[in-house]
Length: 248
Ligand code: PEP
Image (tube, rainbow, N blue to C red; front, side, top):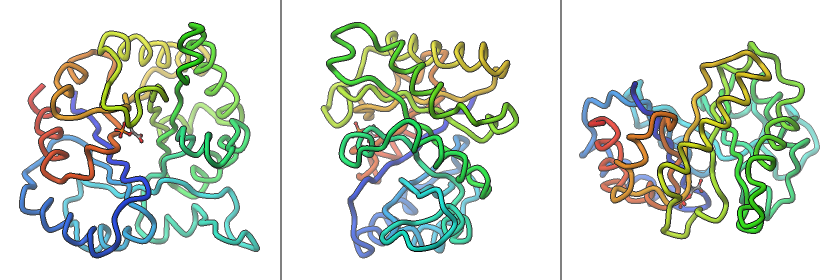
């Protein structure tokens, strides 16, 4: 099965830097079979929607609010994203949970609003180091899913991708053992299947994925792709990871 590769640029790249990135990416681009989603900062999105013509490559946002419009200074609505040519939005990323105090309930409201506006959601879950040390990661993850998806219908699940991202592996350079990532992705799939009777959910792994560890992760049967932060900022490295995914 083709893997899904998602780039999360986080708060990196000015539009000029994005322009350079796109030129480099286009010079390396091949006839990709994988699904590719690039999530740049809001200020660079228009460059991707304008310059990338390959229908296999979709553009995503890294966040949105749950209202359509109004007096919410600084926020961006799913409706605005959709009308800007964006098709995906990352919600529930651990950096939003940690630095912006986003709760499972708020994330759930954002997910609902994004879906209602025709966006697909990349919903991030994952335990922190302390929770892993206490060996409560399974409960943490199923609780995040239960709370944020409590108002979601089975029919919506086809538009939700789940990214398992252990917080302790994000941006550290050290990924989780592939077999452990596989176990966690399977846990998520089994939980969705049991609670929604839906078996098609794609589950990605995220946390220090790079060309050096991608093969071992992508070979795992329950890992449907990757959410890639740091390594996606280098166009050459990102294309290398896509190539690895295509050769599994
Ligand atoms: C992320 O931010 O979602 C992520 C996985 O980052 P990194 O690849 O840099 O660990």
